[in-house]
Length: 350
Image 1 (tube, rainbow, N blue to C red):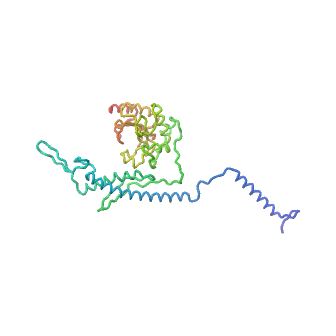
Image 2: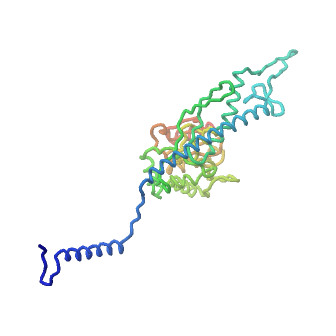
Image 3: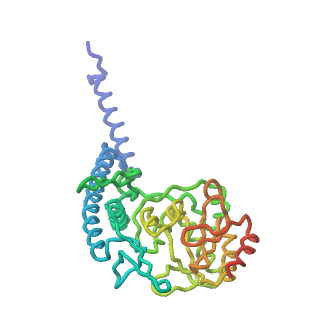
């Protein structure tokens, strides 16, 4: 039996009208309100992982091709330069000598630098590794370690990597956000001093010297740098064609490039928080700039023979606990526990 009102309309029609009305209201509210865009569609991260797998395959192919080209270049260099990577017997017209004759009184002293199969392989690997590292350091998409253990078996060269290839698994359009966003020099110094040691950036270098990558991932370093230039009455910028005081000779370095140029294995340049700033070879001038930088950067080093000072924003702890030093070509010559001690030790290099 159906229930009806006095006009004979069934009760179920009221529910229908009410449902239509509520549906219309919900649609109106949803349509008139702010629209929300779904950022992550189904399968987006799975596609990102597949994309990284394809990039890894490309990296492996690049390594294989680089090795093939490096073998050819190594053999060509050995033919052009006289087989030896480092000529202990000297050279003649740019070609390594296999023997050297020196006169001693009425006699002659013969020094031979002839090579056997073992030393021939060693020299070949040194030529090969130099060329191979150049290729690896220029790969734009991944961090490809260039440290390998080599073995020559017959006509085959076998290389075993000591480290893994590193690629970032992130969705397309991902942007890294800097941990320190302050623009106040004193506040940046405090946050950097008490912060954590950042990881290697593992991104392709945009230029050489690369300051753009630092400004993108660690803009606080650029803030401190421009403040230093301002304090010293100089203009900021990268050293391109003409070196002027306060120009940057080295910024971010890809780990492979850092190894190529002989940088320290734990160089902060690989982390994107370090700068080498040209100030000239005068040690007193380097100390003057280091003194000004001491209030802005957590660690400071001077390099008398190279004409620059090193500054970075690493918390002075762990392997980076050394705050002051005198260095040369990636090596620490003198350590100091205070700026006054650094100043005293620098007098020996004047």
